Amino acid sequence: MPKIKINKERCKGCQLCILYCPKRLIKKDTQLNKKGLYPVNFIDGECSGCKFCALVCPDNAIEVFK
Ligand code: SF4
Ligand code: SF4
Image 1: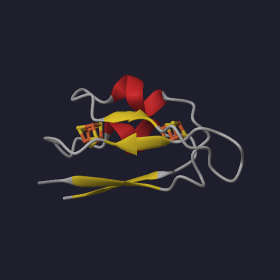
Image 2: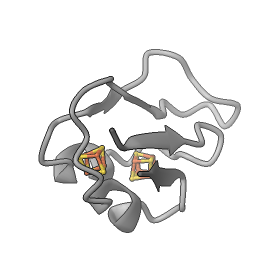
Image 3: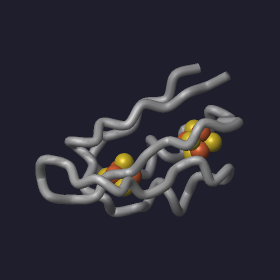
C-alpha cells in the first residue's frame, strides 16, 4: 500500500494537504516543529497514492512511496 513521508521541519502547517487528500489521511500535529509551527501527520489508512498531497504542498514537504 502506498505511504507518504512528511518532512515536519519543512512543513509550515498551511493545511493544503489536509484539504486536498480525498481519503482524509492527513491531520494536524499537536507538537510544534523547530520553526514553532504545527506540522501535519499521516494517519495510517488506505492511501491511494494519488499524490495530491505532495503536488499541492508549496514546500515540498511530502513524498509519496508506492
Ligand atoms: S497520496 Fe493521495 S490518498 Fe495518499 S495521503 Fe496523499 S492525497 Fe491522501
Ligand atoms: S501542504 Fe505542505 S506545508 Fe502545507 S501543511 Fe501540508 S505538508 Fe505542511
